[in-house]
Amino acid sequence: MTSNKAVIIENVQGCLETLNWQAAIEEMEELFSIDQNPLIRVRIGDARRKLHRTGEAIREYVRAAELFAEQGFVRKALAQYNLVLRLDAAHEDARSRREELSACRWSPPFRREPVEYLLPKQGSFTAVRAENATSR
Image 1: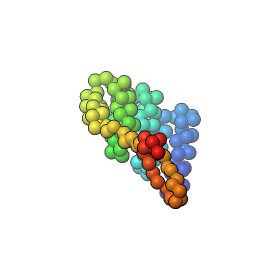
Image 2 (image 1 turned 180 degrees about the horizontal axis):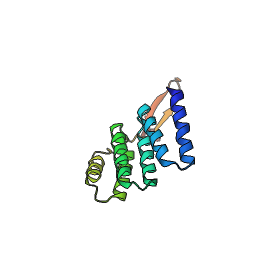
Image 3 (image 1 turned 90 degrees about the horizontal axis):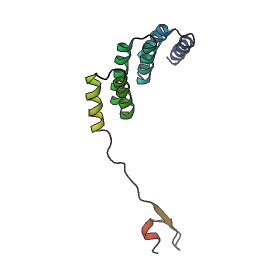
Image 4 (image 1 turned 180 degrees about the vertical axis):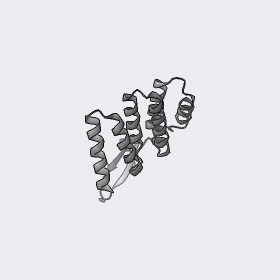
C-alpha cells in the first residue's frame, strides 16, 4: 500500500510538472482514496482553478474545510472557508459555517505562571511561585 501511494505521488508530481491538470486531478483522486488527507482536496481544488472550473474548485475547498473541521483543525477550516468566500462572496453555506466555527473556535489560552526551582539545604527540589521566590 505504501509503495502504491509513493507511485501515485510520483505520478501526481509528473502531471504537475507538465501542467497536465486533468491527469493530476485523476491521480490525486486516487491518492485521496488511499489517504483521506484534506490537503489533497485543497490541491484538487487548486488544479480545478487552473482549469478555470471555479465552481468545482469551490466544492473541493468546502469539502476540505469540512474535513479539516472534523479533524479539529479549525484554523485550517476557517482558511478554506475564507478562500471560498474570496472566490464567491455570495456562498451562504461557507459564510454560515465560518461563523459557526469562529464562534466556538478558541477559549482563552491556558497561562502558566512562571516557576522558579529553589534548592533547599536538604537537597530536594521545591517549586515556588515566582512572586514568592523573590521574597525569600
